[in-house]
Image (spheres, rainbow, N blue to C red):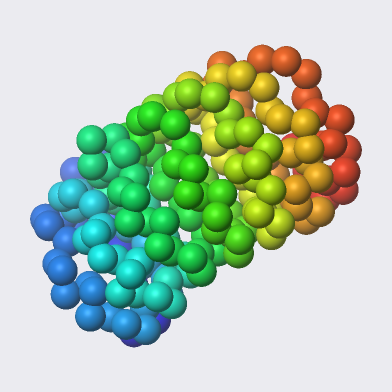
Length: 184
């Protein structure tokens, strides 16, 4: 199996998938795409998730798909070296943006929107390896500080940056003009 997509319904009184995530997920060695949305699964991914599932390219958890452990993403996700899509929207994340995300060199979509992330907007070195990034959604958090100069030059194919509803200050970096595909 290459893809496992578990999506619930987004309406009142809808039946809901839930319970603990089975550790047998780790036996799906060919799994590349894993999505959970509008579900009520307990806990987070098994700690060996990215160590055992080395082909994983897409992880999506939206609106209750998973619950962040104590508001944080586990450090074991740093092992997901082949990720192209890292989408954890509205799952109760707190604290700073995890620094290991800056090492996901194949990342095209990063969505950590609608959480409770705080701390400074990641500095330029965080973004330097994300040369494939096309969509960034960090909106509706509590990130502070400035968007670093050089941010717009990181990925020539950057299409979308959504950072509204944060506590950002300062000017927009002039380097955003280098992102020729930027739409918003």
